[in-house]
Image (cartoon, helix red, strand yellow):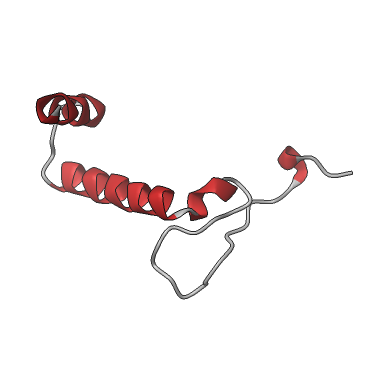
Length: 69
Protein backbone atom coordinates (compact mmCIF):
# COMPACT_ATOMS: atom_id res chain seq x y z
CA UNK A 1 0.00 0.00 0.00
CA UNK A 2 1.49 3.30 -1.02
CA UNK A 3 1.29 6.36 1.15
CA UNK A 4 1.31 9.96 0.00
CA UNK A 5 4.99 10.32 0.96
CA UNK A 6 5.90 7.23 -1.15
CA UNK A 7 4.53 8.70 -4.36
CA UNK A 8 6.70 10.69 -6.67
CA UNK A 9 5.41 14.18 -7.41
CA UNK A 10 3.61 14.28 -10.74
CA UNK A 11 1.75 17.02 -12.52
CA UNK A 12 -1.66 16.12 -13.82
CA UNK A 13 -3.89 17.73 -16.37
CA UNK A 14 -3.05 19.31 -19.69
CA UNK A 15 0.68 19.10 -20.38
CA UNK A 16 0.48 22.06 -22.79
CA UNK A 17 -1.27 24.41 -20.35
CA UNK A 18 0.52 27.27 -18.63
CA UNK A 19 -2.14 27.33 -15.91
CA UNK A 20 -2.08 25.70 -12.50
CA UNK A 21 -3.21 22.09 -12.68
CA UNK A 22 -4.03 19.46 -10.07
CA UNK A 23 -1.08 17.33 -9.04
CA UNK A 24 -0.29 14.48 -6.70
CA UNK A 25 1.09 17.09 -4.27
CA UNK A 26 -2.14 19.13 -4.17
CA UNK A 27 -5.20 17.71 -5.87
CA UNK A 28 -7.30 20.69 -4.77
CA UNK A 29 -5.26 23.02 -6.99
CA UNK A 30 -7.46 22.08 -9.95
CA UNK A 31 -10.53 23.99 -8.82
CA UNK A 32 -11.20 27.22 -10.68
CA UNK A 33 -10.86 29.32 -7.51
CA UNK A 34 -7.55 27.72 -6.58
CA UNK A 35 -6.19 28.03 -10.12
CA UNK A 36 -7.01 31.75 -10.13
CA UNK A 37 -5.47 32.21 -6.70
CA UNK A 38 -2.30 30.37 -7.71
CA UNK A 39 -1.94 32.44 -10.88
CA UNK A 40 -2.38 35.68 -8.92
CA UNK A 41 0.11 34.57 -6.27
CA UNK A 42 2.71 33.78 -8.94
CA UNK A 43 2.15 37.15 -10.64
CA UNK A 44 2.45 38.94 -7.29
CA UNK A 45 5.65 37.10 -6.45
CA UNK A 46 7.21 37.79 -9.87
CA UNK A 47 6.34 41.50 -9.74
CA UNK A 48 7.63 41.84 -6.18
CA UNK A 49 10.90 40.17 -7.15
CA UNK A 50 11.27 42.18 -10.37
CA UNK A 51 10.74 45.50 -8.61
CA UNK A 52 12.65 44.42 -5.50
CA UNK A 53 9.72 45.11 -3.20
CA UNK A 54 10.95 44.77 0.38
CA UNK A 55 7.50 44.78 1.99
CA UNK A 56 5.85 41.57 3.13
CA UNK A 57 3.35 40.52 0.44
CA UNK A 58 1.05 38.87 2.98
CA UNK A 59 0.88 42.16 4.92
CA UNK A 60 0.19 44.12 1.72
CA UNK A 61 -2.64 41.72 0.83
CA UNK A 62 -4.14 42.07 4.30
CA UNK A 63 -3.95 45.86 4.14
CA UNK A 64 -5.73 45.87 0.77
CA UNK A 65 -8.40 43.46 2.04
CA UNK A 66 -8.92 45.63 5.14
CA UNK A 67 -9.32 48.74 3.01
CA UNK A 68 -11.99 47.10 0.85
CA UNK A 69 -14.26 46.02 3.69
